[in-house]
Each structure stands twice: as structure tokens, then as C-alpha cells.
Length: 154
Image 1 (tube, rainbow, N blue to C red):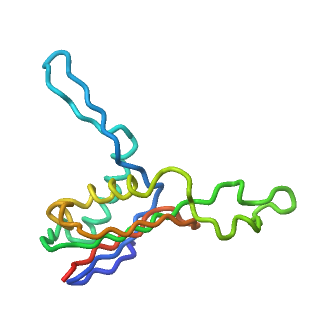
Image 2 (image 1 turned 90 degrees about the horizontal axis):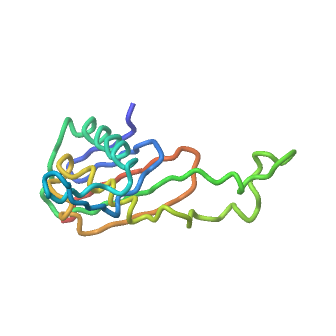
């Protein structure tokens, strides 16, 4: 079951999984056709985008296509590294220095956000150019994924 809230002014939902980035593109010339082909540099992004699309489509009964200016709020939940926990008899106990840390390691938030933003285009909103305000966070948690909130700006 999908945890979600859908109103006339906003949609909030959670997509479980290890979030992937969308950022750099790779372009090359097809030697047979001489056409330029542009592909994503991250081959794992497609599966993640499909997961995001699937959850959004389940919530929106296929699509709602808002055409308003929008705010996109994304909270990416990452698993803590094993180095944040003790070993031996302290296995599973978080080290004091690790308690307040936020994930400052790769991947970066903008590239994570771009992947989700692209996945929702054509399902919740017509085009991602409608997003005029972004809020992107990375935090540690027990259940990896992304909490998505799309809200209309009036």
C-alpha cells in the first residue's frame, strides 16, 4: 500500500528504494546513420525513474497534469554507512560523533532531484519547467527512498 496524501493543492508520497541520479548525459554519433544519440550517463537511473513514475501513476489514477506554477519538495533518505556504528560488543550502537551528521557524500542532491523531477513530468505536471521552487534534502534513515511533495503555488 502506498502512503500518500492527495488534495486539490498538493500531492505527497514516498517511493522506497535507493535513489539514483540524473545528471550528465553522454552523446555520440551513430557510425551507421550519422545521427547524434544522447543517453543518460547513469544506466541505473531508468529503473529508479520507473519506480517513481509507477508510484505517481498509482496515486494520480494515471495522470493529473497540473499546469500551475509548482513547488517540489524532495527528502532523500539514505542508509547510514557501517562506519557510523561500533563493532564487536558495540555492534549496532551508533558512534557519538555520527549521531548528528547529515549525508554529505555523493550523490549530490540536485542530480537526485533532477531524476525525480523528470520522472514526474507528464504524470503530475505537464512539464518540469513549471517547478519554480525547489527544496531538496538528504537525511539518514532506516528506510531508504524519497518523500515527494508537489504543491501548487497561488
